[in-house]
Image (cartoon, rainbow, N blue to C red; front, side):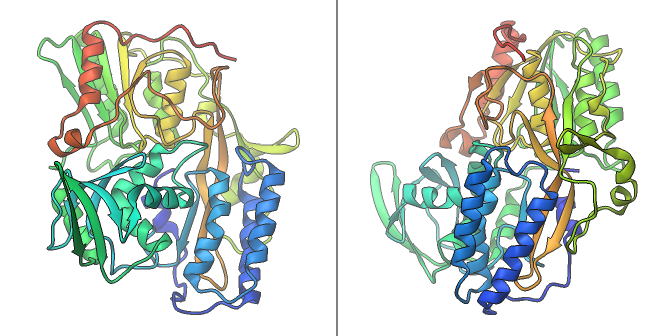
Length: 482
């Protein structure tokens, strides 16, 4: 499973509240050793993007800094560069019992909701009683240029595979206040300089609480819809399929049943073109991505090349991992070369298209929150030249990711939970022209403007519909595979 909510439900509980407690250098060194041991024994692809010599130097430099008493927050922040160096968007680093995105402050939070594009930031909402106009561009926060604020936060963010950054921008769009409080501060007031129209203004805003932010977010939620949807154009020559997540609740909607009925209907109506909307889909179960591609593939395919595992023996430190895996790993994990691979995954076998597999033109919409299983699926589609992609580069990595089931350990003194995906997924038959660390880069990049965000104007969908109407959404033939 690759879903944050499921991970959070498995976190070890009962950790002491140690926010204000000072940790001694001896305690810090003990926790550092547990952290380093856990990565070494569990993480399947520590050096996928960062070479071992670089990692070793970073470990040494970090350990040397743990030579003075620190608070839990200081230790948390000190260790973050090691997590960022993994370039693994699935890694979890959460003080026990705390909100993942607001781990140290639930008050004195930045009161504005924002939209970030590279180094520019616009206001899209106000969580407090004082207001800044929606659409205003932020220029400074407490005297610091907003561009410097963004560049201070980005290097401390882990929601990105490889060298991708769009996942980080999306995280800022949702949790800017939490990141600001953790890595910059939680002051008693926020002096904000902004530009609205041709005017620049300065205003001092009172901070808000996490409860106020959550109340604002709740009010902004769109009307509930089913997570899997299929709609048709008036002439029924084209359709749009939305997959919000790769997992389901059978009481709400059955994913496999939805696909079976939908693709049968596409065939019966002789639909010529399909837009598949995977934006904001952070993933789910691997088998759901494989199943969807069975309904879209034009020929038999391999989904994964292999799935790496760090080791087969029991871990040397206290850790939680699924009992079922621990019981049967002797059967499903095998030696391969200098390492180990996980063998019980349908995507490792050659797959055939379904009888009702869609044969027409395909356009796929992705963005920075297209992650994990969604990026795996998109990689298979893109590598097979099956579709035209529209939107923004995915937050997940093209070559694969580190996820699957998690091993979770709680550091003994700081009481921070470290969660590590145990499987290293490697996609099969990838393009030879891939750049290291890239995500799925759309053929047509469409970045929403602040006006698009405020008015709900969906230019990426408009572009996709335009392409399929003109017959320009077929697969490409310029990509070579290895």
